[in-house]
Length: 579
Image (cartoon, rainbow, N blue to C red; front, side):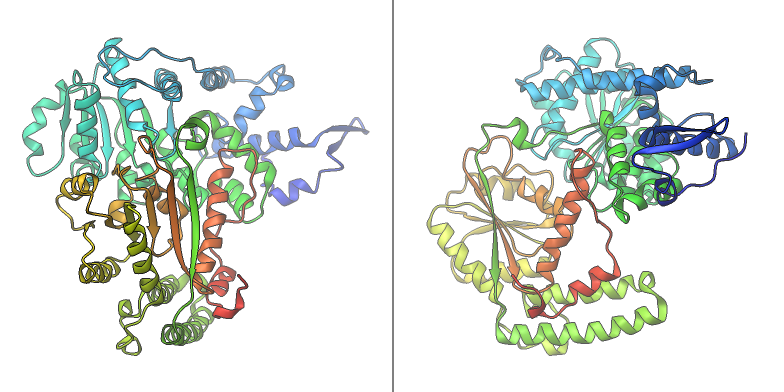
């Protein structure tokens, strides 16, 4: 058999004649459905390329399910396809999950959608597969996983412990919820300085909790143990396949693998590939071919057919429910874009930095190329973002002495008014130096607050003080430290002082307040310096949001990569964007 040409999407599409593929059989033209032929060609191409590399004979790309699920193709005789057919039968069961009974001694009443989630976890794990539980933040992914593990133990399937890997900030939450909901499960926190003293207890545990940092240090020890399952919480930690932590988790053998994340795709489809390379290695092919045959045509070419095919391929292995779908009783959430006009001095500083950075970047790009000046680009964008927040954040002589900040003044007016109304406010910023300035101003106005940042050792005390302190209206949080692992439903107002490129990070932060247990309407304010790069960041956020949504839904248009054109848009003068 000859190797098929390495067809690109463009060259294949040129064979499309009004939805038909025309070929000659004994010199007679025959018309076949083009979409079906295209799927077969791409699948066979990948199969033959896998053969060339000495891999097992299988279709490991997104096309396998479409090929074998098609009624007519099922009638065809595929040599060596018995294993593939069984695989397809297994994944087809994933769409037929049946409700499970809440396990005995589980101290939580599961909602209907949570029971569906537990049933899905059971089917995936018992099939020896893997999956991504991608429910919105605050819907109870941890509760579903604990119910799943308890069912396995009571059914006699838990012969070895389940390894749960999570960020350091989230580990106390896991310990607390295990004690609260399923105290009969034996859990060990294998993290911190004294963890090696627990080595002899690992085999007797039902759940072993560890952190990504501890995993990196203890990979050889953990990889030597037998595990019933491995679960990655906040699994976007492995979105970069080259990251050491992504390499380490793949060394651990288990009967099944799960990722828990409300954001399987934050920036691009390469992150999705990395997660699937952990839960189902080979499912999306190798990284290079995935980038060439799938990611590039979708992200850069806007290939809608291929996007739908990818969504269909991965759908059985991703369970995602949004708050809007399953929490009908959750109160309303209102998002308000509050635009702020920069003051004269602030505006002059912004334009000075923008022009100087633009000239320098153009020269560097001409000299080195766009991809080799990423550090310089990030530095320029950082300075512009800092000016929008407050000139005092910018480490430049021209910024010294400019004390006024239109955004800070607007914020303080909002806090004074909202606190008088009895509101409880979460204020997020990526810049801890900006939080320092806000704290300074709140103290001068005798407005009480608590705060949580990356260097906060005691995370429990400020959370409890905010929840119980009626006279503490403000919680200052750095986006990175406070965006995950917190339940702050005492708040009814969220303010994002500065936008971030990734909308998922902002959504996660907002979900500290907008989650199960919230009984008040929630108002989310985004402070945007009008006409600046912050406006362009909102547009980039929408593109990234569309990318994420498109892998769960048959709808959605893409255009997701950060390009040189995006850079030019971000560096435009303030008056270039009509609001």
